[in-house]
Length: 187
Length: 187
Image (cartoon, rainbow over the protein chains, first blue to last red):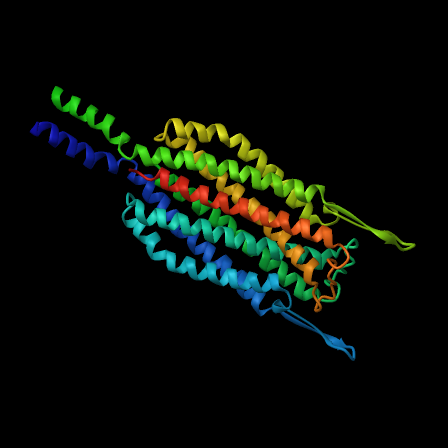
């Protein structure tokens, strides 16, 4: 019985280390992807937040000026991207823990859950902004909404760039979630 | 050594069954949630797809009529909800496999990946439609887009309901992803 106990302990010590290599690789890749996502989300947020265009002419009623806080979707976009950037920075220590201990499931599960939530928020922000940007570019004759990008050309181009960056960040987060799921899998 | 081999085999047979109860519970809950998500996404898609309102007056230029294919976001919404409904129905057999074999990780991992992708698509569809619905309700004075819900009141109400149902389906999918992550965790 002593032998069997030894055997079981030896197996228990041996088995978790199986596949430790690729788990560590996934954890390092996860860390790098997180850095990319931080860059993309903060770039998207700041691009949208700092975009501001005032047209050089005005009527007696108002001066034509466009900034992100004119449209609720864009305000949500800035907040969501800032929140995602902050969350991703705070998640880096947990990601490092996963690199050091590739077999600990608790931090990885925690990261997966919050990553999934943050991915949903980022996707919501990016796609609602995309819907508005599309409208700004093309307008809609049925609803009698005119395209405003002929006037606010510079504004529209910067905003479109921000939306693309935000979608990139959301895609990276989706990839991180899938990677985490693979890493959670029993070896 | 024979004893230790027996012992190891006994442990291997015993350990996977540890926590089998809550894994089976999660799998059954997952199946029920999938049924709810099918209902919500198909309800959202059909509500949006069948909504059609024609105003009882018309000008010499055109008759005022609103349906989902007037707005690209709503068309995307219908397609995404139909796709999500179809995917979720196709995922039911895999979910049943997870109920029968709570410890098999392959179908669960497969489901988690596709659930995460579908969750992103649903969130994108719901939030882009929500951005347009918000605009239809409130308009935007800065962009000179007028609210159309005073005229198309019935249309707007049905569309809002569809958006809420779609968000519900996306939330359920998020919950399914988190549950799957828990079930993938090593016991």
